[in-house]
Image (cartoon, rainbow, N blue to C red):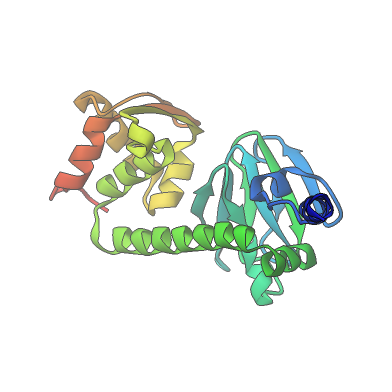
Length: 240
């Protein structure tokens, strides 16, 4: 009887559902999911396109941009590996409110709306991962709003450079930012390219960044001292 009970217990363990791995789910190509390699500046979807899927970034960076009816363009977010985008479709958003494009070479996973709804319903671990993403994005949006309302364009630029570098995360005291144009930085902080050029040159002279500060694209290396200065000082004479 003891042997029979042991065999039954082993059979029950063998038939039990294996633990769900959110990262393995995102990496695996199956029904409802496709993986795509993107070249730099390749469009994922455009503002006004049907919203029918959620995307996960496996590698690289994605830029979200909006275009006003008067033709003014602004970058509202730059997302990196581990982030999701396009989640508005889960709240029955019929059309995309922004354009998503590759800021660097990227690998992304496209998850159809029905597949995303199913995994969120059936897999608590994945739902927790996705909720963490949504909360982080919400906190970042609140911080961005406060930044635009109360800080000078110089301090907004410093903050954006620190965020792009991920400085301070995992104990990093120095980090390299991938190539990004001064025009893109200007769109992100709501100023002109000439002001971005002026401020980046100022940061370089102060030793906060070491950069190739050309107008078409900049590669910057940020140090931890720039993080301290960004938190402690706001130049009173810096124009917006």
